[in-house]
Image (tube, rainbow, N blue to C red; front, side, top):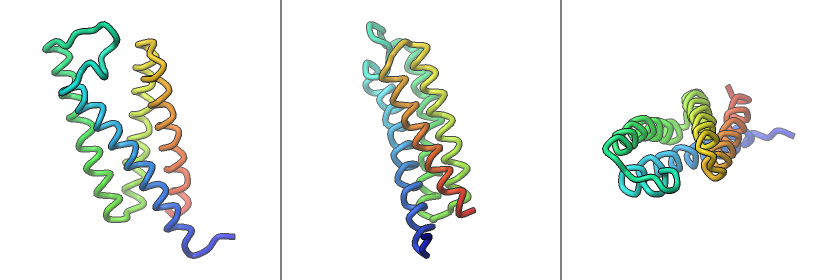
Length: 128
């Protein structure tokens, strides 16, 4: 039975999943700048090019995180739906990169986060 609190519960769950997603993505991109050995393939050495690509990663993830967290703060299901969908697609793309690198951790982690994010978007859509 759906109660009056069901939309609020769905919003809280979608907010938590989206916050987790964007904060993890931001953390990994920031790690690429300060601790590149955590994100580079095994045996790789940081170069100027890898540093620049890490800055590009930060440039895409931090604004997404800030906007998603703002949507959560404002309790805006429509904004969270759009930003959550974008964040989910980005995780699936990150999983594809992990697959290309033959790194199971960099493949499974983003795919799980992407699937969780798509679940969050699907439950949120019930309130739109």
